[in-house]
Image (tube, rainbow over all chains, first blue to last red; front, side, top):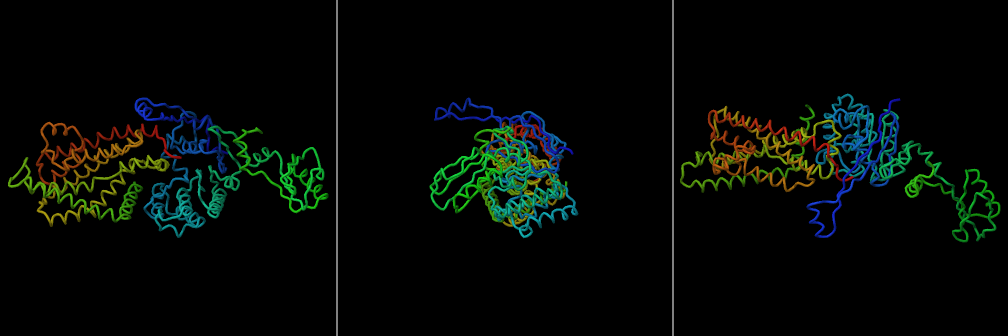
Length: 333
Length: 263
């Protein structure tokens, strides 16, 4: 299968000026300025196949948006090559953008003062979509995103959730095979998020649309993406299945026991793979270094000896894993 | 092409979305024309003519210059600057059209709207209040509109240049304000070029500004006659062509060094 996105050794440097302190510093800045070169994206190689949904995650300032801007042809790379949909995004801009859809969660691409349907109509002309294609495809999009009643309202009167659904629809007017979503769910409530996720899933299944998604909300990624690319300070630190990221990084499971009466350490079973930690007299936390079988064996042993009120198995969340990677570096790779 | 025409339509809709702006615009223009009318009648006093223009020609000049301004004037320099400043230009770059072409079309949409719903009714009101001589000559009208089209092109080109400068300066509201004053002054809007001292006139012949207001107004008031008209329109066409060069050069440079601000 053909690779939709093909990036090798991509780099983007920014020159950033720093101001000197104080009034005399400000005067000196008029003549010479201190600057340093920062690499927002540092030697990235990446390829994405058709129909994949890839989560592109990283902290603020890790270089996610910069990468997206280079992939969409907005920024020119300092060095490296980019091929998206078989084209050079920057050099063949007008032809290239015809084949992609982009949603920037923090910017509106609809015209602020006019009704949503007028924006759609203009975009339909801009992308040269035929009436038949428009009715067929957009009919489905408008229905699924439930934006029919919003079409005659000016954009400035829409709520954030309503606007974002319209933004998504606007990015899909020409039914692009590749969709870039830069924080599409920022600031949205759970219901709207779920609606958008469900829609993206359907879109991916129906049209084999490739989706590259950046977000700070990892539940988005969990719901949508099999593959994640993890970015830290401009470099890719992980590229692979979300599931194996979870498996590799989970160093163990935690089981929290709440007993009916106070329990001392001697009453608890001791094994090599289990370490106990006391929370208070009645509550103990066991960290198990092993798989599910070790966990269930432990639970049955504990329950046989002591009456318990509650047992809770703490799975380590993706958020936790990613926090760990940022703090400690990628231990498993 | 249809996308550019659609853009003009959208611009009409946007103008209609802000009706207060529209009405206050008519008011401001009427006040301006009125003020200049009284100023010039006072200056003329009893004199028949100054610098070859009669008092009737002068008041017509003032009214036409302002009404023409409604057509060629637009704020696309400011819009470009704002779009660059808040990073909206990123959205424009992911659309399959020429950004500058689209901006020009927006300017044209705005201009057409004001010409139809602003200049024409405004002119009728002014004609009722002050004596203004409308030429009965169809050729004069035709040439005036040709010339007006060129003044739109030249003014828009200067606006595009000012707007693109934001890519390099990041904040150029000072430049935009300065440009507006320079155009009002050097284009012959406030004062016909023939009223300036000779040395200033010779400097201005080398600048594109008189193509914006002086030439169409002089054609309309029949201050230009015969071959003068055609030389003047040729001069406008010359500037319209020449200004394409710096725009294209700056635009290429700007695209190279585009940094989308914020996020």
